[in-house]
Amino acid sequence: MRGKRFSIAATGIAGVLAIGAAAAPAAGAASAAAPSWHFVKKVKTDFSGQFSAVIATGTTTGWAFDGDGLTSAPTAWVRKGNTWTKMTAFPGKKNEEVVTAGASSPSNVWAFLNTMNAGSRALRWNGAKWTVARTFPAEIMDASVLAPNDVWVFGLQGFAHVTTALGVWHYNGRGWLQVSKTYQGGDALSANDVWAFNGTNIEHWNGHSWATTSVKKLLPPVIPGPLNDPVVEDILALSDQNVFAVGNGNDEDDGGPLVVLHYNGHTWAKVAGGLSGYGPGPEISSDGSGGLWLPITPNAGGLSYLAHYSKGKLTKAALPVSASDITIVAVYRIPGTTQQLAGGYTHANLSPGSNVVAVLLQYS
Image 1: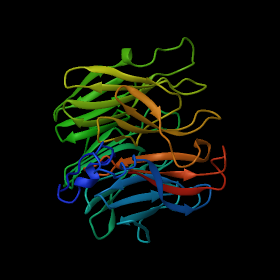
Image 2: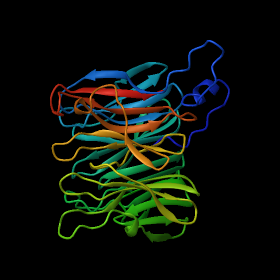
Image 3: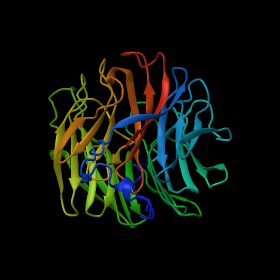
């Protein structure tokens, strides 16, 4: 999940909301520094360490999840103020990885864990402890946490290692109901307003049925022969008139080109294109100013990077270290602000498997 549904009191955050705006300084005063990405936590680890999912539950509270489960169980880190503390009672297991997470309040936090070829689990924090809310027979790609009685899970399907499709599941506070047996990922605004995607189609659930829209003509063109595979790779619903989808041409050599699509309540349109690489799902985030942050994984022999969509353009973000030394995995907007949290890892130059340090960053 991408941290878009919280509302927090305006009192005390006026200065936070001003970040990124061009505030007029007093006479003789220096202009406020422009927002930038900087490290807020580093954890020395082995090759399997990385902050794979992050959540902000307030301006100075949140969670982050470290580890891909290859050598040890994933861990949970809780934020209070400027301090991140490892929680010893997180029930992650070896061979599990937290692939996405979401929250509707500090006492309703969910983490979704995959085990390769062995299903997935949904864990819930109620403000006091973590419990297992559900075990699924297949892997999770996306999730939306709207309320304690309104949680959506979207499953992987259509990939070589995925033998069982999870589909789309809804938790209503009493139990889980499967509302689709297909679709790769999605995002929800309410129990009657859910968006999903599968291949070149975007799907919408109105509480009773799914409606299908093909966006094939808006995606990069198919290259003759098995050279690319244009598909939708993630979706972010901000309102009925403001839905983003990200597509990828999946060129076999470089990945991409990426495209950003937008739904205005009536039609889908392509609003940006360019850049190579694979991704971004499942972690993309609203930037709070009409744009997006998108973590992009590397192509063969290439570099990972963090992309920013704004005003019709896709650009690569400036990070505190060289792109050859860092991989960004997840990003999440701090509620009510244009600030962001991001998770990933630093590593030896062009060598993601060595000298690994799990890192959290903040854009402010």
